[in-house]
Length: 225
Image (cartoon, rainbow, N blue to C red; front, side, top):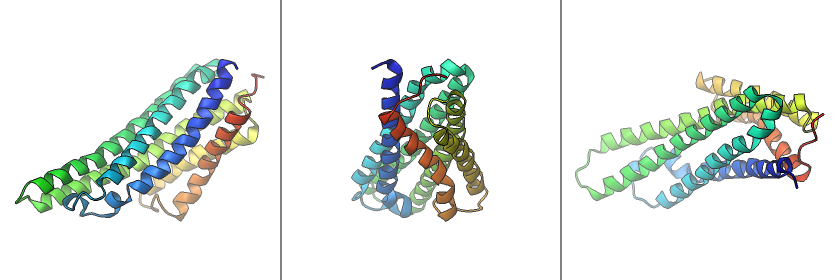
C-alpha cells in the first residue's frame, strides 16, 4: 500500500470522525448552552459538558490531521492551494479550541461560585452569558466561515486533478460557497445557524465530506491524469 493510498484512508476516516464528534459534542453541550443560569447552578452536568469538550478536541485534532495528510497530495498539483488549505483548516481548529475553552471556563466559574458564599450573582451570570456568546460565535466562524474556503480549495484541486469522481468535487464546489454564504447571512441576522435554512445550506458540504470520505476509504485517489 503506497503513501497516497494510506493517506486517503486516514483522511476519509478522519472526515467521518470529525462529523461524528462534532454532533456528539454539540449534543453534550446542550445543558450549558440552553440554560443562562448554568454558571450559578450545581455541577450536575459538568461531567457531561467536559465530555463534550473532549469530543470537540478530537474534532479539532481530526481537522488538523486532515490538513497535514492532504498537504503533500495537494502540493503535487499546486503548492499555493496546499498552503491555503492547511491555513484555513488550522484556523478552523483554532476557533473550535477557543470555543471549547470558553465553555470549560464556565465550569471553572461554576465550581468557584459553589465554594464561596456571598458571591455577586449578577456578575457571574453576565460572565456566563458572555462565554456562551463567545462559543456561539466560534460555532459560526469555525464550521462555516473557515470551512467554506477550505472546502472550495480542496474541491477545486479534486476537480482539476480528477483524483476522485467529478460529482464529488462538484458537490464541494457548491457546498463550500454555500456554507460561507450561510455564515454571512447568519452573522447579519437573516436566519439562525441552527434553523431550516441553516440546515438546507449546510447539506451540500456535509454530503460532499461524507461522500468523499467513503470514496477515499473504499477506493482512494485516482492516479494523476
